[in-house]
Length: 238
Image (tube, rainbow, N blue to C red; front, side):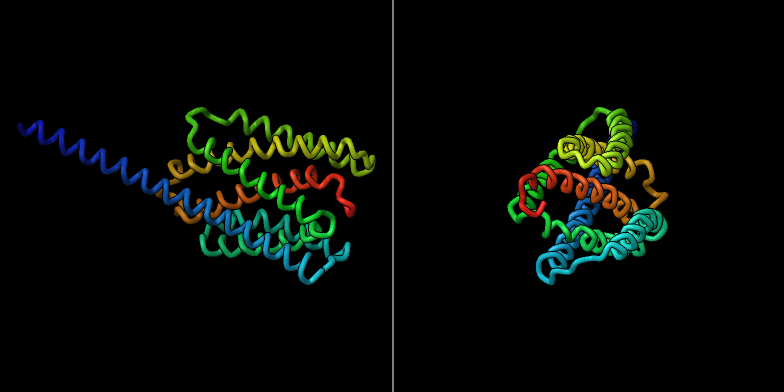
């Protein structure tokens, strides 16, 4: 009888642990995707206000300086997130605002219809791949490795095409870019989920969530921009 009671106690403790772990995971993922969505919202508002309301046009020098700061802040945000959640969150919001400012030109080059189509398509694509990444039992490490290799090749081709000005290459690059960041969305989603179990107790959940939100934000922005270049074909200003 005593042995039965001990076994029941162990079963209850195991059950509670599983419930607590599941609750913690759901809370962690909610934070991660919530902050990622907030970052996209900040970028969208800043971009819309600068490009469509106030018609702010950045000079080439301002754009260059902005991109240098953008790259530095991208690394700083992830580094700060792992050290201090509050600093990481502030850096993420500032980075999102800077991104919105730098890409406010889309309201000059593309129509509202193209922007809306690209955003909705990116959103659907992102949600589907995020769900796959979080729920699949299959390791996506190989997918991530292949996507990274393809991204390096894509960057090289993109640089070459700056001098060639080949519109067909532009279209191919855009389609390949969509495929790459679609894959990255699923891969990063799985890695973010795994990080909760791997670093649980070593790094705060908020820090991990901000770090993950930054990665997912970059996936979404790149996915959106490549889709926009596809939907924007034929726009008069493009």
